[in-house]
Amino acid sequence: METRLTLRPGTPVTRKLLARYGERLVCVYDLYDEAHGRRLESVELVSSCVELSCVFRSQMR
Image 1 (cartoon, rainbow, N blue to C red):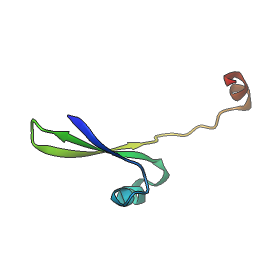
Image 2 (image 1 turned 30 degrees about the vertical axis):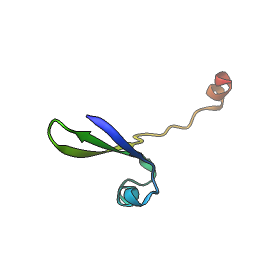
Image 3 (image 1 turned 120 degrees about the vertical axis):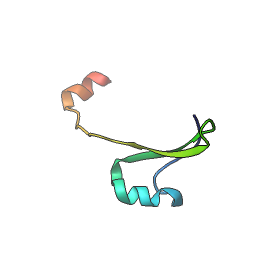
Image 4 (image 1 turned 90 degrees about the vertical axis):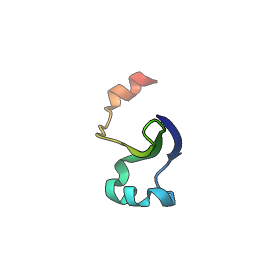
């Protein structure tokens, strides 16, 4: 399989997916499977978001 196209949310092609997944949508990939003659559409989503504590942020610097 080969990735030929990567789209960010907000482009005309991704509007339906953006309406479905909202802010969780990171990007959309078009994968091409030449062996089976098909195109697959894959989405990358954020599954969870956790606020980092102030202590942890200071350790990252």
